[in-house]
Length: 491
Ligand code: PLP
Image (cartoon, rainbow, N blue to C red; front, side):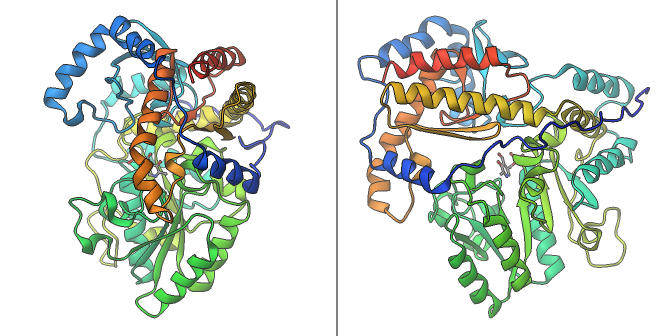
């Protein structure tokens, strides 16, 4: 296979990170709290039939396929993020910033496969390398391949905290492995996460999902013992974190504090600028490992990840999504050699190890795709370009919403744009009566907004989040803004 290493271009005076400005947390929380208090406001009742008519008239193939899928797939979709109101759309083609459904309708793709395709969908230079490796040795061999270490070297080059990297199959697996590693390394038990944060679906972290304070609410099928050593703290509450660390010290100790470094659910409640550094100090004081879940942020925030942006050193970094540029089996754990050697691979070295594995993990296709995707991200400064698209979109949306007097809140952390219309994800168990009373109506609003965006040619993440990519030119964003305005006219 003729794959010569193309060095990344020298860095210019371009910024290195996608986030041009961190939101003013106080102001943002005031606006979000005002949205929670505001009466629920969505698509007008008289406008909704027109939205649904789009799906009936324009999407007959999707409708027929959705019916077939519902017979053999629980809920009719395999992906939790596949938007399915009034029925899931079946997509047949993607290219850059756009996606086409089975009936030939085009959408601006702000789902970007759930985040991994920072370079834009189906990016040609990476696709070509994927073709080459498939032609040469198929997707998997089960043996060492040169791109296994080339990918690890490249990650180490961009994130100096990472001396070693163990590749796994998904973000979920990587979180599971990182927690096991932290426990094996420290000999301690407790794991603290931030309420509302998502770290995949392994037993121990299906706890306090989406809405802080909800603990085991989503833990059907998970024995109490599996979450028995998991705790959650409310976002940005350092005092509570300290108290939990102190309490844990006398009952087995804290193995790890795991955070999404932008804040839970990719910054749905953004951290304060000093939060991660303060958590680092607390981890040092109490001897816990700090795990950064960079499944979304590495390399979407920049080549140095969120750890580079905040200049905070985690002990372990969890990867997913971007690590293979959207190709299969995307996950891994990185950290210093002193900790990572506990993840030693092979039949075993006779020393204590935290066992992880995976038949198809780190296959040649994943490693080659990851290597070239990350190289292209660095060469093109993709995170910053996608971040500029996020800035333009958020600014434009705010202007439209102000013009129409809407109570909605929009802000962006680079290429992650949060568009809160229902505030569902901002509620908490601190006000359980309001949560229980309003959860249904707010979920319905989110679904209806998502359907209205789709009917106007925009695909979002669950109706409340947008991932921009390097393919989002000013023209794409301006087109999206016109379409969003058409939706907001229906409110
Ligand atoms: N961690 C975070 C922050 C995520 O956003 C996700 C998935 O969206 C995961 C972990 C789980 O990754 P995967 O879906 O690859 O299992």
